[in-house]
Length: 439
Image (cartoon, rainbow, N blue to C red; front, side, top):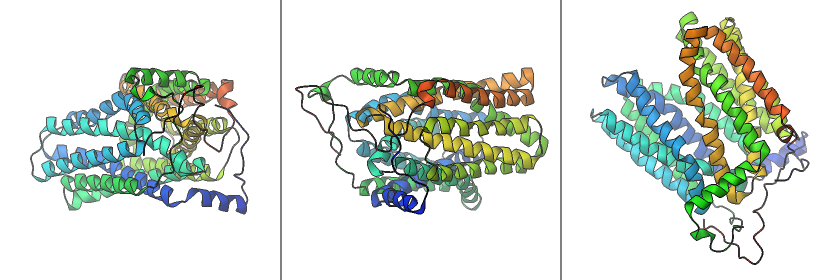
């Protein structure tokens, strides 16, 4: 990991044309389409699952259990999936993960269309989906540096597409449920995995960098790879420092904000107002992604952390009981700040970490980021009962600013200098042959 000054990325017309030329290749276009379509399908799923189970006599607890089956399996397996992705061809694993989910969602569609809905079967499908999603996820990060020279621009473009999908997915699912059935939404979701798999098959990847690990490492134990990934993760202060701070963010900010904002806005202003606030949050994430396409800060994590300050406007505007337009404005600012931070963070990881361990590092990143979110969500209710939802949201807003201060207080985080070209693999050990993973 070595920082260097940013190269290129000027804000003039010439710089913008160069960025566009480096970004929008055939390969990246296919990957972009795969991510956008798959994200659209993923945001349709909660609507289909809730509507389908409720129509068949199940309650909110069953909906939560079905969703938790996927989330828990994903969180529990993603670290191990990172090891697998570093040992085998990442794209092949992603294609097979899409094929598996195509099959499971097609099966779910058949069950709902046939009115044969049994909760344990839906949960079992969710377990398989979670495992396949864990196998797919490490490649989301490691593929970007291989497909685009402009890694930040690629992350910004993907973030914009995913944000638009986040806005459109629930609306599309609602229309499909209204005009067809929940089974039709599951069928459409299955089709998105088919599109993603086809796009990945059509990719023409550049030859993978030679693996720097010594000859014979391919036969090394799975546990050895897992431990190596942990050592690589632990050796980067800026990396584990962000994840450690992010655990606090998940517990005290993100976890309680979601459910408590929903309760407060719906109870005080109605579901339409909540829909407006949520839409403003999504629109803000689009703006943040667009800003990340254009702005090229030299110290990316410092700039991202400063932008993250804007998230405080979301819980504070609701906790202080502001008007609906002001809450919508606060949520838009929050979405923009969070999205900009997300691009800066993803780009830093992808450009600072050697490609032969990137899948494992990304897996630790995802696992660490997700680990504390359920804790924050679970504590939101008891905290609101004890202190009042408004006070908890105000504390969350203040804590959001504290988190930013903690990030900026760590020299390794605030001082990390951007690298526009992803690093090559680590140097092989003397006297050993380099191995290349097949694609």
